[in-house]
Image 1 (spheres, rainbow, N blue to C red):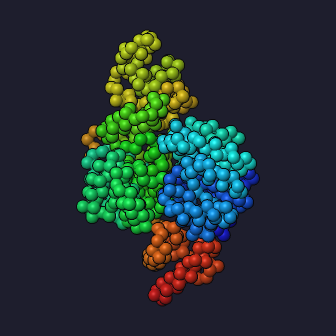
Image 2 (image 1 turned 120 degrees about the vertical axis):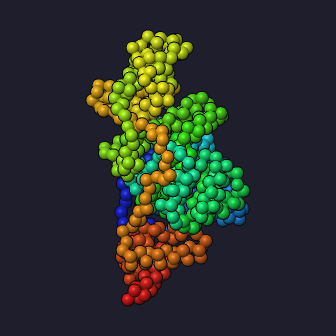
Image 3 (image 1 turned 135 degrees about the horizontal axis):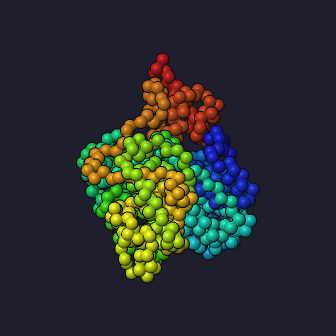
Amino acid sequence: MLRETFGLPEFRGEQEHIIAHVNAGQDAIVLMPTGGGKSLCYQIPALCRPGIGLVVSPLIALMRNQVDILRQLGVRAAALNSSLSGPEQTRIKAALRNGELDLLYAAPERLLLPDFLDMLRETPISVIAIDEAHCVSQWGHDFRPEYLRLPEVLKHFPGVPVIALTATADPQTREDIRRRLGLDSAKMFLASFDRPNIHYAIMPKAEPRRQVLGFLRAHAGESGIIYCLSRATVDKTASALVENGISALPYHAGLDREILKQNQACFLREEGLVLVATNAFGMGIDKPDVRFVVHFDLPGSLEAFYQETGRAGRDGLPAETLLLYGMQDLVMRRNMIAQGPAPEEIKRVARAKLDALLGVCETASCRRQAILGHFGERLAEPCGNCDTCISPAQTWDGKIAAQKAISAAKRTQQRFGAGHLIDILLGNRTEKVARAQHDQLPTFGVGKELDRTGWGSVFRQLIARGAVEVDHDNFGALRITAFGDAIMRGQEHVIFRREEKSRVASATTAKPRERAALDPADTLLFTKLKAERGALARAQGLPAFIIFHDTTLIQIAKARPRTLDDLQKIPGMGRSKIEKYGGNILEAVKAFEETQA
């Protein structure tokens, strides 16, 4: 199935084990990075097992994208959502009843409709996949209440294997997924969250528009996304890019729905277009050749940052990210949390997640180690592919400060958050400090060499390094890890980042890179193949990447296939694509070689 339908030579990572587990009728919870191949983990069982695969998906764009890709592979896939006309919905329901579908995508709220649920109960179901499963958790960064009712659906399909999948879940969110979906016996498959092809760069804001323009000069002619916090910033930034000769379009909820559809379609279909967007854009967008992601403003959490940067380089080729952050961003983010409708418990978690992101921004150590550490994964060596690895920051010896901070947590029985511990270190005799008699502790007032902002940075960097961790179930208390204990005993050295006050950066460390090791002749053929792919895509009204990924065209340019059998050896050339486009590809290669003779 992997080779003939999907045109792939081998499984990646845990894919084969996950698929075998679900094929055997067992439940699974899968955590795999964006671009890591989650979809195959339920698509292949849906094709191998008798019945129709049911996929719960939160967004129309996500469903449409997946269905277009599957149909190109010859898979009978469809999506039922509010964007379809009445006759279209009737046709898909008839196909469902007649067993003419392999996979059906639907939103969670549709599954709860009694008539639709009755129809499903009369249909053999091969597997139920819950995509973007972090949406079920209030601890997650994208909570959707309708996901909480999915167990009502699952109880109607006893014996059908359930697979819940996400790319962004810290340890607490993972257990919340298990509990809320009732997947107590599900096996958890935890792939590495690392995306080694992505270069991470983070810097303070200093003339941000100029910084972004400098970054984009290194990415001329490439597709990318720029995320902004507000609609007004989206509009201003998109206009500024256009004024500077960069092809850019805005995307935010304040625009007319038809304009949003058009701008998203343009981004998917055109190469070299920059989309400037709020975080309303992106989930489920499977455009593989996004070469960069820029955060013009601070995201709301490390999970959001990880998911949004993960939209770059899904084809496995090098990609760049840049995050700009400033004090005004931080104030705005904290105000958004404070003024939001969420209960205080959830606000407390949101503040802790924002602090975790700030810790990554302020760390002097490897960014990737800090990011992966948040998701419970330890990277043994610095990555060598982030700004702090390539251009080390100014630092200071943080051993004594770290020991003071950890001691404050230890002497208060690890029951308090950073704010209270900072009051103790600064010698602030607040009502809370006095009531707990923490002004009697040896650590009271021992930290006056730093101000409140400085101690806040210390605690965030300790969280980012994994020396302390936030206990969301205990009002954000900081708990000391084994690594933190080692720091206290003097067995680990601690270096903190010192922010360069006078730093004015006009560009990031990003540099143009070779996207593939192609010689000049192969590069010319690659360009011709892209033109042929573009023509095939336009004829069907589809994005070019749905026809072929760049990585497939690169392999064709290198291999110069002459027969249909030769094409079978190219990754991404499954049976259906060879039947549809094999002749076009072979003709294009032959015509190119004749011009070179």
